[in-house]
Figure (cartoon, rainbow, N blue to C red):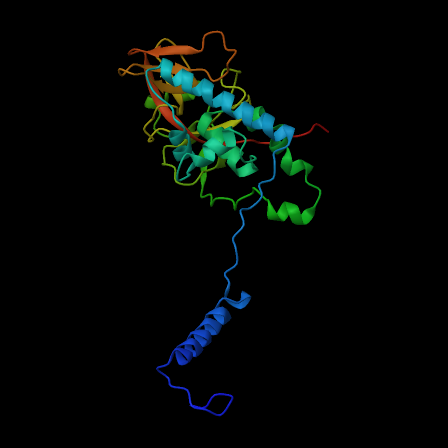
Length: 287
């Protein structure tokens, strides 16, 4: 091979090796240019919570602590993993972040946590509880709508009186006892009937006048709301069903201000059915 001066270069010489090394170095430099560099992934910047959102996290954590203490007093336990499972989440991370103010509550998470920990959404976040009525942007409403398609209803069930509910074991056909009918909720048994709530023992979750659907074929579990027949009464009663450690069972009024919230079940009570749905009807206006 000729060099620039016209003389031959021996490929085994040091000069030839140096030439090859320079060529390889240039090729490596070309591969390390900006065109071959991978983009650097940046951590997303988390938006800090507002003072109102911080207060929501504190209220949520306080409710969880109260429910945890109540469970411990009954000889049970309540963990963040339990709450996450009730919310349908894969792990406790989201629960922890909501409670500790790492991420802000949203409407869907608030409703799931409210159901899991048994509180009204407005107790934790008046901001989110009133959100659907405060939104003014139509496109935003469509984007954040919390309205799901209505379930398919088939047929009707009778609305009976509390005295009739108390005598349900002696009644073969509620249709013969009631002229009022309401749409049947989905996936309920043929024995399902409806009642109008009266009194304040189950407020604020169940206000007077609210229609509740009761299915006698559903087996009650701890925490369910049930209609029960007390032997000493002529009418049925509406309470929350509670199973205590050791097998003892109780009926409990949900109203925290109710004077006698607990009713022991010791052979004096028969569960009529479990509340599976509710319906609110707007009262007609006069004139």
